[in-house]
Length: 131
Image 1: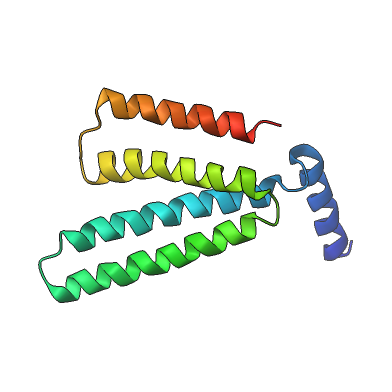
Image 2: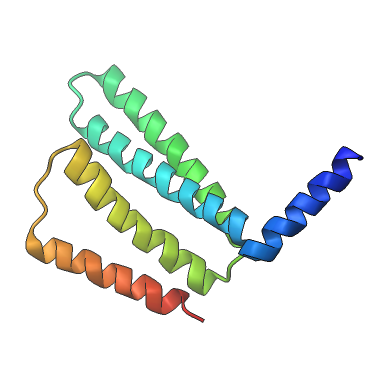
């Protein structure tokens, strides 16, 4: 069997189960979230740097991650309308930076009010993303 035919059938099978844009949407959203967390964490590390060289290194890392974040959002807009993609990525970034970067990486405390705000963000994402 020709490899291109089997790949086409595989792709059709995946699309039938997940929908035509589900895989790119999940991958791009996940990539956007990951690189946004990397960018924000890099800027925090940069701010705490003791030397100019270390400061500039983390600024470069943060800005490169930020560039990838913009590229993933731009690509995501091929699959989702702006009114869905922007709140989705922005909301997930707030949650990701707060929980992953602030809490787990930098051990910053998160108050009950901040957790409540996070729940409101999740609710907002669900409301905006609903069709």
